[in-house]
Length: 297
Image (tube, rainbow, N blue to C red; front, side, top):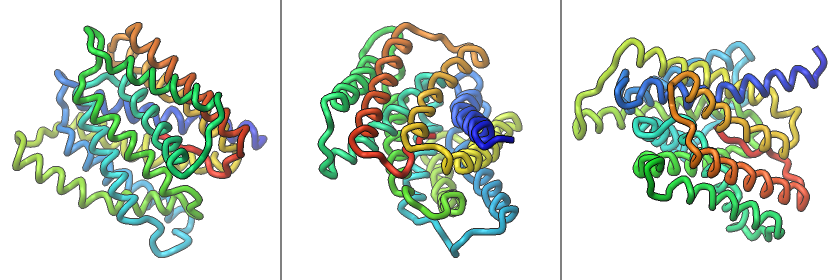
């Protein structure tokens, strides 16, 4: 198979996996279905993801170093995964993916500003559009997403942005991700204990466990592996831009598979956010090409 077609295929499958995470989590946790509680979903997701990533490393021939992850990155990963699960108890898949994606990219672009980067006018315009889209999505109204759910997902997006920044330039991203998943397991077990003591008793059904395993093993473990296989053949700009499709796929999947409603607010705010992120990334690419891709899951 020609390299271009292979890269396109790997990228498409990885992006479907990223969107599937939102759909699987929402299907397991949405009010009314309640197939599993958020803490248990997070635990099963990280454990199954760590297992699959470890198996993939063994098939590949192991890691290039003893341990490629870190406790700081594992904490960011856990914060993302916990906020992601807790948010999807309260908000639809499309809204959640849009908030997550926007906050991931806003975090990474914001860190660039903090480090002294001087944006061009086009980049300022893009950032303003993206933030405006997020604000419109949060305005009070009949179609506004649940405030707590949106806040939790925004926190998850910031955490994943931090995780992505910490992992830039890692010589062995697959091994680092496997190690960080493994380090995150005791943290999520702690979340389950806190949930048991503070909240109601955990709820676990076979269907809920199956959805959590699919999210961790397939959408996360296999999805991340496919993405890392495609990344060496993508420029930073292409890697960032193709991820604009993730919230769209999640929103369409939510409507078709989960019976969610596609509101005018979601379409308008989502369009502004995605166009704004695209303009900001385009301006940054023109100013100074970035070697490492911007990643969002």
